[in-house]
Length: 127
Ligand code: FES
Image 1 (cartoon, rainbow, N blue to C red):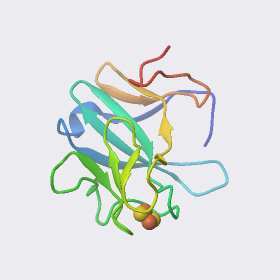
Image 2: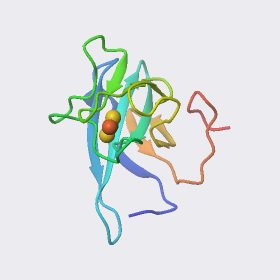
Image 3: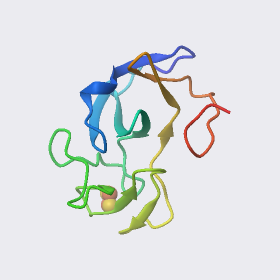
């Protein structure tokens, strides 16, 4: 459910460095919120698992989000590529559009989704 409270997503060590995992959080009165958590070292980027082209989930199998180079998230529907660092589409049918980013941080080894109003800078740190 959309809330002003922080929400636990997973432990950081559930995700190998440089990889991504999918998670689903319950939402009040609606579909669960699908998330992609990308681990970059000791930090994370958290994106909505929803392609900006047609709104479909990116993964073609559970937790399969990366292309063969490991540098991009790939949409399983029409093969758009999104940068891991900021979710921007660099190839495919939606160039210049981006995955929805969700503010998050790692606290005591746990990935925490912050309230939607939290303001992050480009490196996903609270500003
Ligand atoms: S739905 Fe993702 S590229 Fe078309």
